[in-house]
Image 1 (cartoon, rainbow, N blue to C red):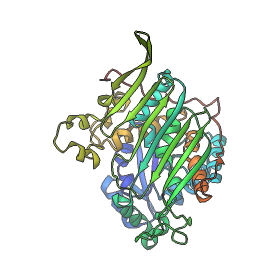
Image 2 (image 1 turned 60 degrees about the vertical axis):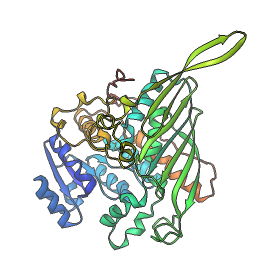
Image 3 (image 1 turned 30 degrees about the horizontal axis):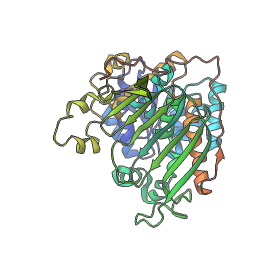
Image 4 (image 1 turned 180 degrees about the horizontal axis):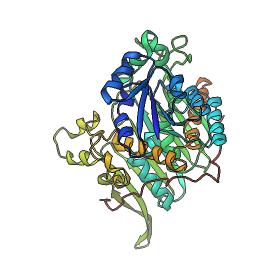
Length: 426
């Protein structure tokens, strides 16, 4: 595969070495609207550059990887698919229901590969909950919570200023629920269901000194920096998803906090992960105590190797709070053995998941099989957020969420998960 990267920013820079190293990718190129950035990438990584997206689409590149500003993904993906290119796109999928519908239809018509790079699908807690849900260990799904906390003071100002120019505030005020996949994607993936209805409330932030949120201040007339959605799932369960941009927390930014079923539960407590299951009943004398619970600490399975290595350091919790161990190594539950050997010495990325993202996309294009986060899965991760923001603008009104269904039954999927390692449970 010959791959063109769209957007020479700090995030795409983390992926170039992985794309270059993958044995199924023979050539990598770059394009960016800012010539200086484009040329810097070309020199740093030794890759050819194109002066425009149009020029790249007219080239021999067979696939494109889109790393532009979030609200531009939909139109670029549509243009790439119409040009006959396979597409890897950073999150979110698109900025409107109509764009998501068009992308899904184009993928169905062309049989081209589309994959959204949702990190939350591969995060250890999501892997664990999804695996235990499939095995029946949770019983019937009841309730779960997930969140994406990315405070404006923790990197967002710089990111938007880098890409948005003098009018960066117009884009920085994007509704939080227009970027919903790190919370909703994890929940939908782990439950194996999808969202039918949503109610959402927003935290008004139009008096803040940065003047990012509020009517007339951004391209969406969005007054909310934080949004909380209640999601009614098709399987009868309920989820809560938070997307916050003004909150006093830094790390962990994205995670499943709780996951409850009729037979078992999962709970996260900042540095520790617990799996609780019913263990039958016991009777003492004439009194029936009811169900007894078995608790397992699965932290060593879900935390990264580097994370656990520092657990007894005196400043351990402060280091966790500042994400000191997020990029250094993988968690034991993640099957690194399935990855190309060429990846072994490369940077792990968000908890190690970047390597899995690149590997699944490359294998999907090579085999013609659908990647796990394909167009239909991505739609189910994105659409609830777009509707949730509309609900928040209507004061929390309950609104139906359109569902585009499952992929065609005739389109084979890649293995939905790596073989998970559950032998490390403590």
